[in-house]
Length: 113
Length: 116
Image 1 (cartoon, rainbow over the protein chains, first blue to last red):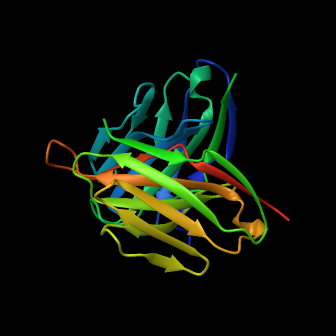
Image 2 (cartoon, each protein chain N blue to C red):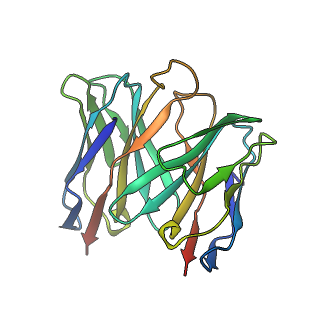
């Protein structure tokens, strides 16, 4: 059972570089989301999607873009990386719009120098 | 703004002890409260609570919700070193706009260390 798969697991970038964090799920879940986890801050929602072609902003969306062209994939793009974006990023998915728990990927540890 | 507060933020106990972790919340249109366990990687789901007073149990772990007092507790009995982790509490609520998907608001977590 693959569940939610994130790649890469680790990445180091220089300030100003761009990159895409990949997230794929094989559970046919409608809802997918991206969180960042920083020490002492808990998990904070960046962007989410309720289905293919539909995305919306979460609590901390600035500096990040998302798209949802298929049910399975929900990539997160950093257009111009900043040191403040150094964090651990988690992708999650769930069935339906509410009432079910989210399932998380193993995370991507991102460092911006 | 939705708010979830966990206490204590960290806790060190000895193997065999019983621990109680707390989670209080202020949420508009509360739908459910979830507990997750996070070791080195992904948070893994433990419980989802929607009704007051009904205990959910899984082995040595149990949890209960009080919707009147707006809190939940997670109990772990006969703790083992494998219980060492960060325990996350989160609440879900539908958007105030009335459409779309439930949002999930996390607390900062309780870092539990079990010493042998």
